[in-house]
Image (cartoon, rainbow, N blue to C red; front, side, top):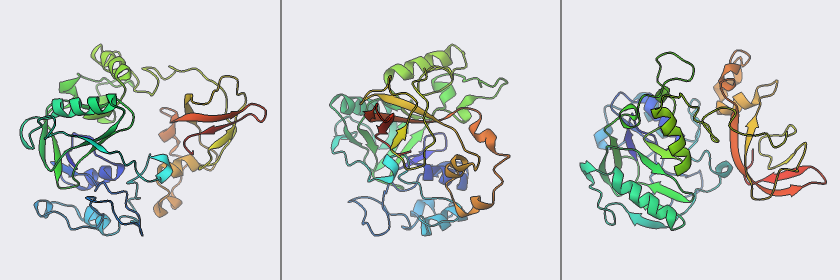
Length: 320
């Protein structure tokens, strides 16, 4: 899919694309999930495919270089499947709605498509999930698109085929978001997006506070950094672990959704991981970059699947 620079890109690869392209339209990476040795799913574009004709001449050299070697580029790590169960196959949700056929969205950019998208996403969520398909075309987005339910996928026809064209800024749509660090900076420079993944109650509490100019914190659990209660402490663990040792299991139950707060170690392995562990990062001096984890705790939402009180161990649905 494509989206304007003010929009939310479809994947972390898209962020690299936005940095590499001139102002105007930033092209998100193909929604692929393809790995070497695995053929793409039907209709999935593949990294390395030719740049669309309409984009030639305005694509930066770095992006062209990346599309030739998307899995091994020395500066841009392949993160097309980041965030979903440690790189497991992407969810294959059946298509339950076509926003053009079923909800009347106009693929020629002549009318605001946000209401149709939001109705389709809401209905899919209420029915238990599924894929909302956005056919090829250009869709004008005058508002905010929000996914507020689990198991819902918003999917286009691929990079260069489905374009979401945002026409208004978050300041226009919600209001000024004053920086919680003071001054005149807007927090919209690093928070929010024109596509939100947010339950209704959390959306309302955050946007109401922004409109009231309370300078809220856009945390998982509330508008303040301390809007949570500590359940237990976790012993040191390694990346990839799913079973961890805790100080006390009393407040933990199978099925409970929890938020882990991760702290770095003396070797800065958390910072290294956040940088993508790319070859160039091996020579970084990390001691002067700890402020990257000092603004807010690095948090990891997950669900408890098993509790072993005798051994003070819990198992999580996602690996660290």
